[in-house]
Length: 156
Image 1 (cartoon, rainbow, N blue to C red):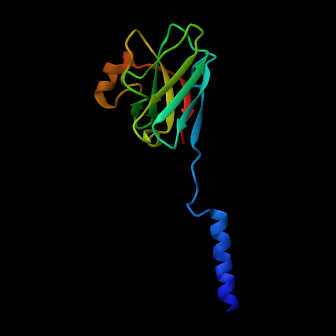
Image 2: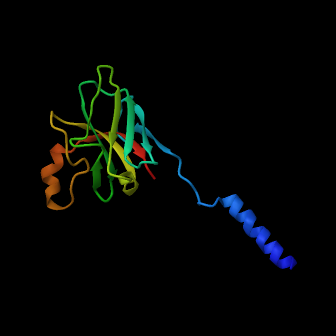
Image 3: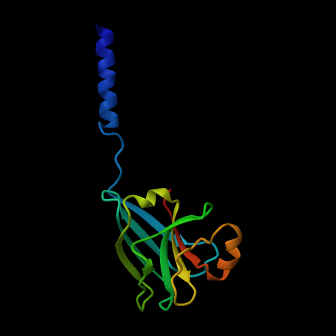
């Protein structure tokens, strides 16, 4: 009898300590955007992903060049996988002071498949559709059109 009471007591304590539903995610996932390797500007920012919906994202950045064309992508650099943030062409509007305040929607939980959030400076007036380049022989053709990552945020 004492053994049964002890076992049930232990089970109840464990259930109480762990919670019935397991670990819960915070409603907002905040990602610090820091200068990427090789970027010498003073830009910084943050992205906030609403984990409750899995689709809403807010990006706030300061210190960008006002005349630059910037795009945002979720990326896996090593595997060359990417997905644009928001709707195409994934452009972030920069005001005259070099600030960005962006709110948009993504595919549900798409950010979970990637390791980084990258903010890219595009060359020319056309936003790049592929920020990480391509493998194989086509890489040489894309070399001049690849944008430069200026800010990066770690997703996992």
